[in-house]
Image 1 (cartoon, rainbow, N blue to C red):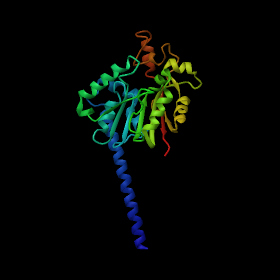
Image 2 (cartoon, one colour):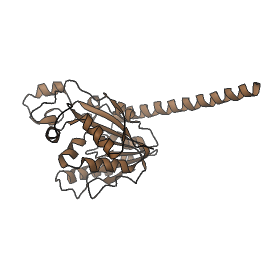
Image 3 (spheres, rainbow, N blue to C red):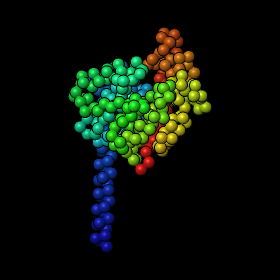
Image 4 (cartoon, one colour):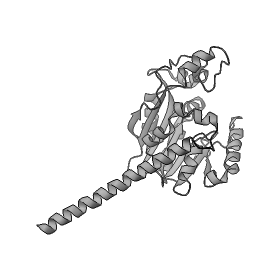
Length: 275
């Protein structure tokens, strides 16, 4: 009896120690993300957008942890890269699935080149970044097949709808993630029932349609979060989502009005590739 009790207590002690270690690892990751989100290598303008983009809370909702293999899908100028790359450097793997230099869209190769220059200019932060290409249907391998723990895309789905490549993109994410891997999506949220024409021109996408795309690719829907919601966004602006900050497509016209609304209302969705 005493041996059994001692064995049980030992088991509880080990379990408790493991739980404490896991909690400490999460706390350490949180602290590191908070430090990086406001670190000196980020511009004042980028740091100012933390309030609208909620990077620490968003990344934690998606389950980001040190040691993971992570793909950021089309990082553009690298707003999130400034956090993710140094967070994973030395303890994880970070893939930046970026535009192709062969893209038929003229704005994309220059953005890619600027990103590459940014990576090369600060090797202490970005020397381990692995840049891959995502340009359906010819360039689709954003990471080795079934290798990634986490793939994330921030405000990109509307662009794929405009290009008619949304299904190819989600298929690429599915192929790159390992079984059990997570896909995180942040996107400007359209009112449910909005037409494809509206989604193709406004920059807003319905949450149901994003879920439909992911499930069609094979993902399971896990959860949604209101981390990036903005109830002030009426989504009926004359230049679509680009009317709002930070773009201010109308220039000075009604600028104070749109500044008061703030950045767009956004869905934050988590999916999983079945095991």
